[in-house]
Image (cartoon, rainbow, N blue to C red; front, side):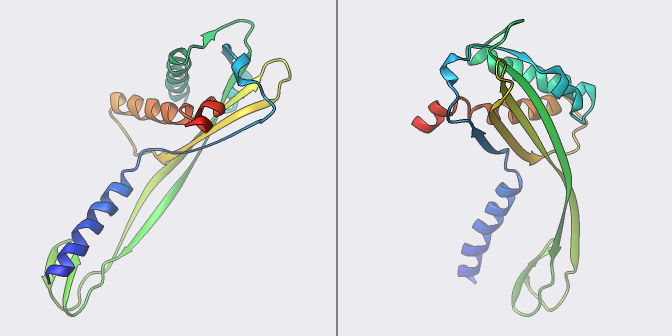
Length: 185
């Protein structure tokens, strides 16, 4: 009995924490690009206009990117070194949990202890979103860096929480830039 509790409690905590993970980030870049030469940026309107999200969410994302770029020493310019574009995707994730337990000790959402039978299936859905941030060399018009953040986009009705979640996505993605500094860590 004691061994089961010792195993189950940490597993439940781990499951809970993994369901609350923030943003999973991937990045890719052109090894030939000279990232030290990029000091100024501008938003690439053509690319941003194609992002299939609300104009309000676009504004939130662009404000978050602007704040991160400023924090990294970049300045906005009419004649930029790099262009910043965004792209978004979202998909519904369906999770099915089989809560059947029988004989001996078990767990259900309603009970922990000895029992026979019970349980059933629980189904939950969540929206998983991806935000891509592309950095394009303004002279060559070639993609030099791309960051992608993937995470749960809980239907947030509180605007402050929504803006915080967007800032978190952008910050986590741009931590991967510039790639030379990330590789040196």
